[in-house]
Image (tube, rainbow, N blue to C red; front, side, top):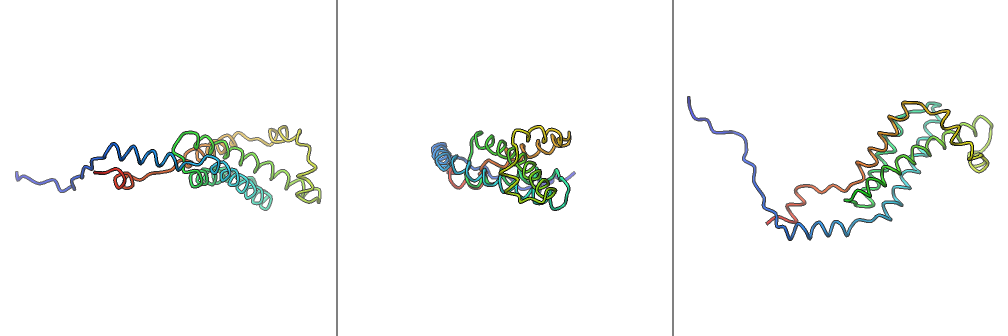
Length: 175
């Protein structure tokens, strides 16, 4: 039998300079911005909740996938605005994704009440008895909501972190 050479390409090993790698990591940590992540993530949660309510009221259907969209929107916005590397950014994204989902359901309720009673949305928003909201939301809760809220929380967490490519690490810390 003949000797056959391996036709697979050989991986090139890049050696990283530990000092440069440390400096690069410190620079990335200094670029993190939790207040901006909070502001951007909150805005994304509100926008996602409003879109959720508009679609739900317009179609008269509660679409669970809206939660997935809210989670993605919030997580990506936290990543973009906060440039976070640390766990706190993921937790922020997860919490704001859940808040966005809950607000989406609340805004949908307000929309349905406004349409049923022939009132304005802001009129209902300002006049609603918020003490009753938890009870009404629990009554409309379905076990499948756990799945979609869980997916939103997961996406809010997962997409909240800044991603650094291998190429970027090599370019900044390679010898």
